[in-house]
Length: 299
Image 1 (tube, rainbow, N blue to C red):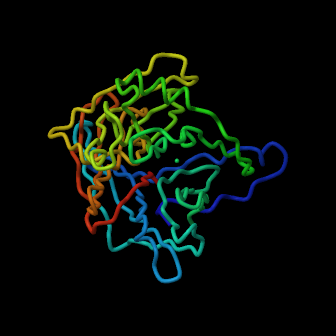
Image 2: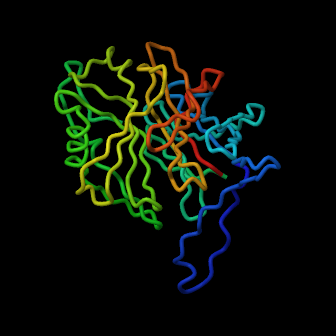
Image 3: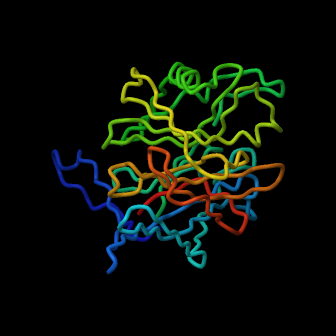
């Protein structure tokens, strides 16, 4: 699919077969000292994913260039290289709603948040009813998947409750999450909430509760959460974070993130770049064609 991605090499015997294949990144150093990286974004088109008797997602390649001063970033997309990823699997007529991209053991993986399937390419909010009351906290459980495909459920309810309270959105307020990454360099968790509200959930008002926060947690979540305000101007409360990846070679201090807008029946996607201290390097840049991109990855 993405340039710079190749199928995993055959593993050897003994200890070699237990090693995780390291992630590889396609990078070009330009004459002016700038660096260009290959990006891949993938769609979650909800009900629009149905195409005949199949369900599809769109993968779009692009390039991100960061200049030597570290203060300027450019992103170019290659729409003419859009690729359809199709599947016959669905749940109640919904499928291929791919919400993220990640590489694990040499494989490029993307989860379908409707069917629960994990696709190889070659969760949301606590559920509230129309009155804003919490009906179930099932989405506060996370899934841990081993290399062999063994799934373990982890109860993160207290983690999410503590995070919400420390960030200033305690009950009846709420935070909803779609974008989280573990930094092996920093040994910390990074969360970009999709929505943040100090008031009870309301479906219509929720459309304009887009968060502009970065929340950082320690490895075991026992230390106080760090809450960083992203210094974007102007603010866009109708847009919320849906996915992000760390810029390679940035010491996990620069984030490239997707933001989604879903107001009434209007869907738009944007990409932005900022530092973990909240400094914005690239203001929201729109991805055209009306597709909702909710997964991003450097390949």
